[in-house]
Amino acid sequence: MPPSNEETSWKELKAGPFMDGIGPVLRAKAQDGTNLYALRTDTSMCNAIGTIHGGVLTSLLDQAIAIEAWNAAERQPTVTLQMDTRFISAARAGDFLQARAVLRHGTRSMLFVDADLLCEGKLIATATAVMKIVASKEKP
Image (cartoon, rainbow, N blue to C red; front, side, top):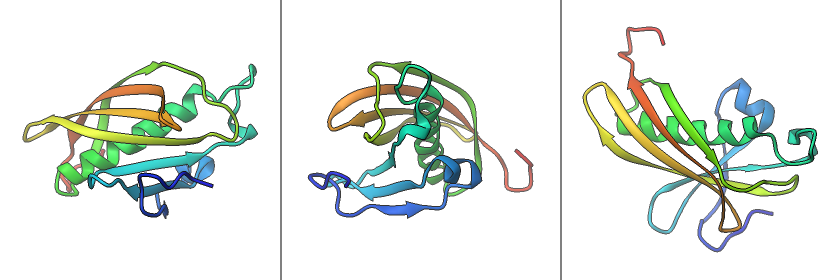
């Protein structure tokens, strides 16, 4: 069961076929009004040493960053140009991972977004990303 100390309620998010394959991704509002994104982990997400695969962690961070960028771009499509991830600690099967992304700077065509990934208040990974706003008529 997800922790309920900060968020009001978790709702499943339609995040596309890839994320649905490892998800579902969940979303809630924090008390400060920011969006939180979460993923319940299980053994199918583990690597050979028994921790949650870095690709799963990175995917959740990228999803949180992409949605925040999309919102900041007034719901215009955005694509990830670059994302740097730092793994701080391991996550284990059964962990409830939560990501929060913050827009640091934006221009007419680029957004710079940071995100943290936590489990029960413990920092698991951080990421910084450069997102490009794609005109609706352009194909990403």
